[in-house]
Image (spheres, rainbow, N blue to C red):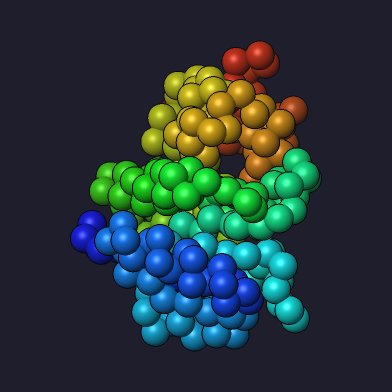
Length: 232
């Protein structure tokens, strides 16, 4: 990802919202491209390789949830969902399909810009920390290629699930508190949201086939947090 003039793809079927976001982001020095539906967004993504996506949920035909899932099949680009849907379950659904953050309309411009900066910083943090692959039993986490393998087969994770697994693997053998994990993986906005962490951990364990009661990989430390086992 370039550290100068990052490109942001705005996906929203409302032209006024596109124009408002585009004007605001260009004033901050970002390069902006737009799309009104999922097909346009995928074409723009493949052609422009944006550094971050602002994604509306309520779109015709293919909604933001489905588009986010499609993008996560081939990219870990930061995705921030912008939507009028503001229930806790809506937020969890958005994060579960792979969004990095979720902000409800109407929103303050300063808050959105801060969230964008935070998402881009987190991306740079993960991209700039080359490490040898992590191995535990039949599990491999390839940090440089953002790839997770089990018995040589790739495991498809959402961006958030990958960051969670990566953070645990980089600190294998150490107990990480729930608050520390939330801060690093999601950002300080989600400080104290243990339910969100537990939900994502359940999904991650399911994909890895890891039993919480008899774990091969991730151990729960009740009332504290989690620990990735180390090879002995």
